[in-house]
Image (cartoon, rainbow over all chains, first blue to last red; front, top):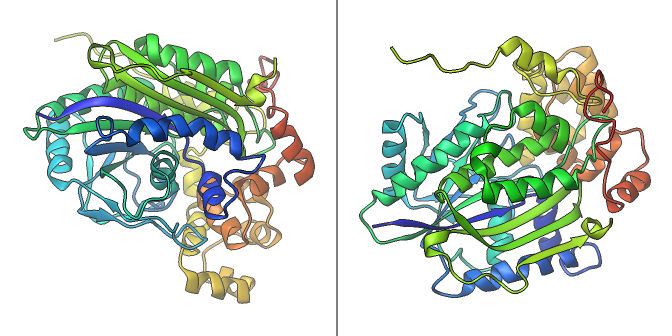
Length: 301
Length: 139
């Protein structure tokens, strides 16, 4: 049967993609970010850690969904998904190859489990989906695994509650585990961490909030899932609300998890960046060495 | 019959958003107001539209059902003005991408700081949340 072996979180900011495409990934500004991701890239390149399928939870940034259609939870069931033109021309990255059998199975299972999924068969994917793939798999000719894009509305209010996201993760776990094929499945939660991209308060970063969020996500997601939207908005900036998507990943890993790796960096453009590898405790592998990396201004007292 | 689930009071939920300094949350009310402005921005995902827009911005804007304030804000690249008209930053990103500008440029332009000052603030750890969480509570 298929298993959710790993949860990964990653930022998905477009500037990371631009840093790769312009060759600036190892300059003074971006170098520490790409260094912080290198252990994740090395870890996932080992054959025993490379997923067969990634369920990639992200938010569409007004790309596949404009103001006409705003699904709260959607699932990409197509054979493939092309990178979208977000105004600069499409990102020069491989097409995202789906896993329609698992995706349709998940859609059915989730609907039976009371999550009314929007099924997408023709969808372009934006930086929310492709930047995490670039950060974690680098620049290959083709992505090394199948990907099921899983867009969540966090743009038009109200987004789903943290509680509902956490419960959705649990239902994703059940959906994957009822798929008969033997597959190593990852669930990735992307976006965050604290950031605000609009208005006079733009540029807000809250290191204390972010580090507590990571701790609680690992040890007490049940309590974390009850945090109301207003607290995300006040503490982590208007776009920090993306962090509810990390709870979908966490919910898919079961009660106890082991953190294999944590990376936190300030700033990546307008944002604080966080990247984690988590595994269900019962089947967890060895933690990376070093297990926790902080860089940039996050090291300041 | 089991106990009814605990419900969120929608009026309280929405009212709290108005208590965050320097922030306009993209509520249904703003989404309705900004419908045409945001759809105009979406149209810039096609290269032919970008070229047409850049060749004659005013004529292109006149094809859309926009308020005068929205048109003025677009022409002036006044992102705070566009958000006041119901624009959302992810929709408006198609406009600043057409201008070959980054999210950092657009965000910085809304703060009253110069681009250099904003970049410097980010390098030094970003804007502190202290005093920025609540207008009423001043914390």
